[in-house]
Amino acid sequence: MERILVHLPELLAFGALGFAASAARGSGNTPASPEATTTNTKHLNYAAEKSYESVIVDLEKQLGRFEPAIYQPSGNEKPNFAEIEAKSRTTEGSSGLMIFAKYEHGALLALAGKKAQARQYVVGNPLVALQMTQADIRAAEYAPLRMLVYSEEDGRTHIDYDLPSSVFGRFRSPEIDTVARGLDEKMEWLVRNALQ
Image (cartoon, rainbow, N blue to C red; front, top):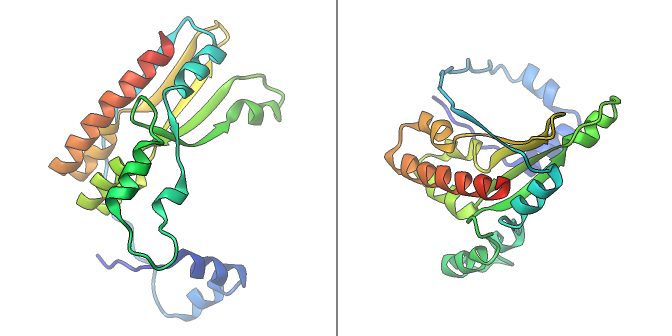
């Protein structure tokens, strides 16, 4: 299978100028056929008789905040992994994870006139992702992880996510499997503490 390296800034600039479509038509290259695989992913749903607001507070206090500047060395200096690792550890929460992003789906639903409380989190840890992507770069497709916190009309609050070991299991890598099982434990600890 042929792999092509594309630099994102160059690709964006090329697309912004509107040349991507015409270049593809005139290049004579035919698009590659996709390779399809089927995997089994285990989805988890936890629910508790606890308010949405309280769950959000108890979830977020266990999560650090992703600081992208830590992973980008300044100037032409060679990255010092030990220094980067030490700085990264200071941004982890008690769960060993951090928030990369959060999206208010409740606010989006309000645009359609529906009242809902729902927040999607993108959580993970760059050092954990590095362990997996060293074994197989395709693991980057699933790192960081996603989870959804939402409330139902009955007042119960739910946390949904896909079990990391089942998601990363598609790579059939002992190294990735070991790291993913560690993520299973981190996610379970995080969720149970938020819902209790």
